[in-house]
Image (cartoon, rainbow, N blue to C red; front, side, top):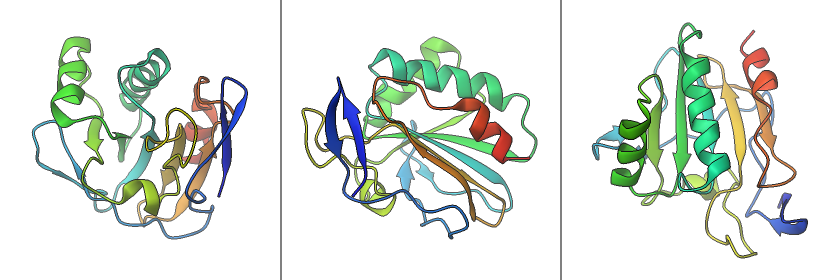
Length: 163
C-alpha cells in the first residue's frame, strides 16, 4: 500500500504504482462515447490519474495535459478517473479539450491494477492523483503519486521522462 494525504490526513491506496522499468498492466477503460480505451500500440503514453473531473485540481490537470499534448510526438495522454463517460465528455466539450483522451474506469479493475484506488478516507474508492508515463513498449518510464491529493502532479518530470 502507498500513502498520500487529503487535507494533511494520511490516505492509503490498495497497492503501489507500477515501478519504473516494469511492464505496465493492460488498460481497459470506457471513453466519453462509451467506446473502448486501451493503451495505444507503438506510442508512448501518459496516464493522468485523478479522483474526479468535478474538482478544480483534477480539471486543471486535464487542461494542462491537453496543452502539453499538442507538443508531444508519438504520445497519447489518457486522463483516467471513475467519473462516468458522459461527465468526462461534457467537461472536455465545454473546455475545448481535444488533444487528449479520457477513460472512465467505472467498470474495470484499473484502480487495483495500478494501485491507485484509495482504501480509506472520505474519498475512499476513488483514485489517488498519480501520473504513469510509458514508453512505446509499455515499460514504465516515470510514476508519481502526489503527496497531497489537492496538489497538481509534477508535469515537468512527466514530460522529461519522455526524453
